[in-house]
Image (cartoon, rainbow, N blue to C red; front, side, top):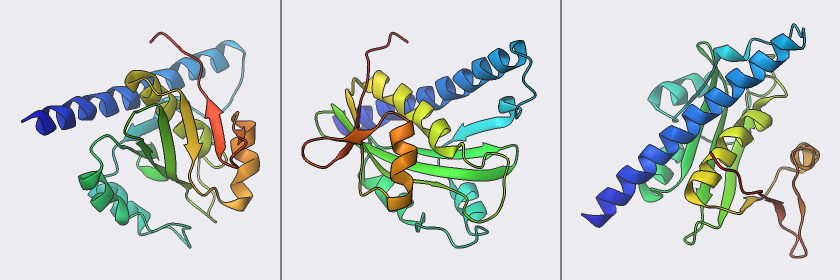
Length: 181
């Protein structure tokens, strides 16, 4: 019974983090419009769980870096993990899987990928959007650090732009500031 309650509680936390990410992008859209920017319409971005629909859309990706089918098994084994499918309307543009450690002080970003090769509406924005959801989740569960597990060499500069840096142990990490949500 306690495991089921924990699973349900974290299911609610994941859902809340995705909802807060959507709210944050809507707020960002509003601020861009106030500034007179004709930027991309972020109100069309959706943050959802990685479902069979997302995995079917992933199968259409050209030369992905990761095999996202593994996530189904990981989700079953890791009830505290956060999985995110980032959509623009009906187009899957990116996915992310992040997992907190047992103490929940650190969340490890296991996989993060935008749809490779082809142009899509959220090109070069997937990491930023994923971080919005991950940081909301981190604050909900009380995490203080984010860590990128085995970052792709070409992605290190992107993570650094998002506030990550290498610690003394050679891990790519970001310290989170405490926010009141």
